Picture 1 (tube, helix red, strand yellow):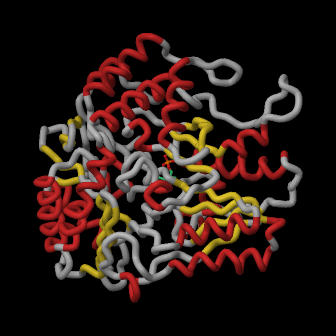
Picture 2 (picture 1 turned 135 degrees about the vertical axis):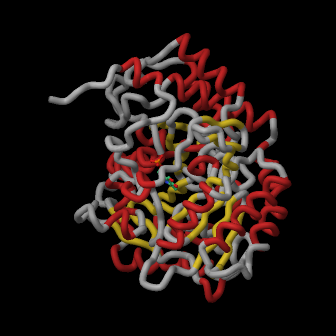
Length: 450
Ligand SMILES: Cc1ncc(COP(=O)(O)O)c(C=O)c1O
């Protein structure tokens, strides 16, 4: 017979006393449970362990908490909203915060990207954008356009759509044949030409021309959309080569292909502008977002679409549903309240401008790690950076695992590790002294696993 713990004692427990039941995502569970990295509290630039140890957050949680942690106005807005309206559907009904937030997001987006479809995560945002692209060509009489084009090394979340267009091998190879009709552009990274570049590399703009070859192979009449991260984040921070995104846009225009920017990481200030589309002066047809929209406080994602895309669906009888798609929690009131308060913090504290102003200092500081043991390359753009370390021969990812353990338990810093690459994406409220502190702690951790 199974014994059930009293819900009261569970609710009151300050630290978990049994790690067995939880299956952690994207985590080596058995190694983790031998020496867990537990977080109990957060404030501004820091996390705190259950025993009160202060951990400097060099990852904004998971590229999420751009406004820093537990910011008073955001906390208060969530509390107020919970007391006012807990939930209302957005299927056939709606509530004021959902309208206000979509208007605020549309105002931040470039050009005529002026309609917002809400989801609860980046993965859902990506699958939504891909479905809108396919449906767009159906409703406009071009149903043969069914192919979706992604890019090698791309990360677009974990839905079947996202892993099909994504290009990170381990995220794909265990899950069958995925969506049919997908093709991939080559990755934009080449260490021979780009190693230790600050910002966007000079070399590589021509790699966008691979889209012409894909079009030549399949014919434009079969291709609905191309999706890329303007800056590939999860694969290890790959800023776009100069001119690359402009060339993609030109080729898409030439062949009537929709261009989707996955801005789940780059949106909301990470690259020193509301969206990377603005930094690079390229207007996509759709932008996916998540993470920073609520500074990570309440799950939310979404897709911003151009007017022409939205308008194409607003045909036919007015009583008919135009898009058979949506999530129960699309535009959840708590997420909307959190989003509105977060956008206020970004605006009032000028955090996007702050990220831009700090970029030179940030890039100089991270490049200062060049020459440490096993450092193969360093990349940076906006308030984002990555350091590639040489793998331990025969044991890829082991050095990364050891470094994560050391950095958390000994150096009191939270980093993101992808294989043997360290990824750094601090909250945008970071001070110049804290940038130096991050680099000192990272340097100590790199030395410790040499
Ligand atoms: C570019 C990009 N797209 C999609 C996602 C998936 O977002 P989520 O984990 O919220 O589903 C991520 C997550 O890191 C991402 O970086």
